[in-house]
Image (cartoon, rainbow, N blue to C red; front, top):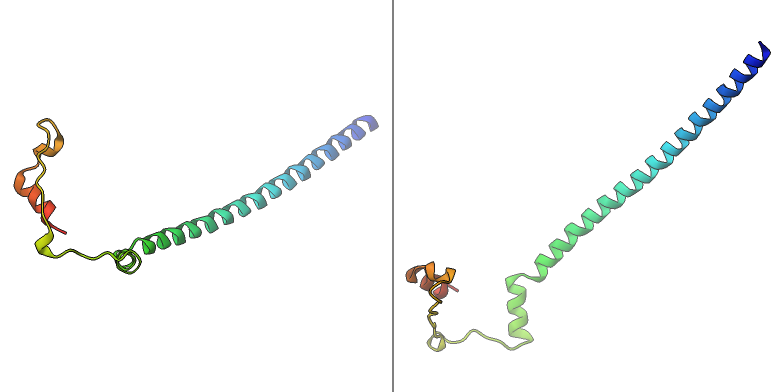
Length: 109
């Protein structure tokens, strides 16, 4: 009977140690998961800020300011602007556009 009690006590201790070990591993993994989720949130915020910055750099007024200020570009006089019609190849998809639609797209700034 004592042997059975000792054997059952050893099994009980082994089970208790395995429960403690598995709980410790689960807590460590949970902490690691929380850190990774926080990093993902920070990266999402940074991505949003970078997209906002990119849209700011590409605004029309900024590009026009650089074109006129640094590159000394200017809009030509309307009398100097010439619109050259394009005659597409017979099998190209551009040939399906009607001339009126095409000229409207070309003439709009």
